[in-house]
Length: 339
View 1 (cartoon, rainbow, N blue to C red):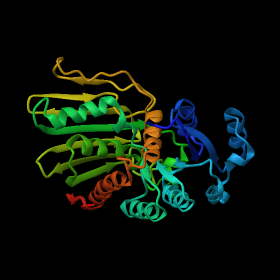
View 2 (cartoon, rainbow, N blue to C red; view 1 turned 180 degrees about the vertical axis):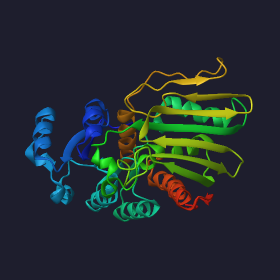
View 3 (cartoon, one colour; view 1 turned 90 degrees about the horizontal axis):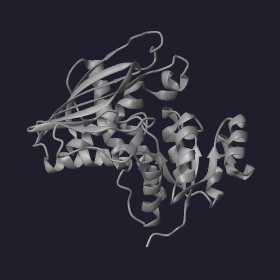
């Protein structure tokens, strides 16, 4: 029987996602609770302490982040900092003896992922990825359609996710913080959707990038389009962008029909599924994806079993994205490395 205990979670990075989604979800979770904060903002620490009734001892600065090792109330560290800092913070959390839960993208590239995985393995802690869509019933039903060939064998997938970014969002437009643009930030959803829908890893990719404003996107990619080919013969076309608004969907084309979701990936909206056959609908009651993913990780830890959406999932996405960046640079089809 599952224990009624709640694992303590520390949130590292108090940006918009932490404020609007993660911290509120921890108040509703069954097996997870907010136990500590790590922030570089004294102003935010005051606000969060008042909002969530936290003591001074539950708030850490980045400089003394490693003192989490001495805090038995913290079991899991949720990394929600800018992309370029994920590796450092994940490794520090692991060395402090805490399980690590990381926002996408896992790191800057596949090499980062391998270092993060190694650090967690050495420390004997789990490394989970915040791939909330994989736990949503709409996405899970779409996966079932693919596996059971409900509409026949899958032939082609189209996926896109993008939004119009504000020029003052420095954490996403400055390379020293983001290490990439739309592809790492939201294009990763398209990559992983194609992977979990097909149940395969792409064999090769070809890609190109376009900048709508060379000044704003001087350091990072703006709009990226790419095509992927899988060993089974399935193909995929994908697009991601920081300058095209309201793009959020996937479409699966099979031998005898099609299905998909629109919206599919954004956390601020209710996902909507559709199919070409009313006898096989793709509609479910919405869930709190953040509650579900954090409780799923806590349950795995408490039950002493591996969390399925682990660092290996993040690594596989980065192997694809590394190949996409290589293709943009070379202008050629590039192979995807085998993990």
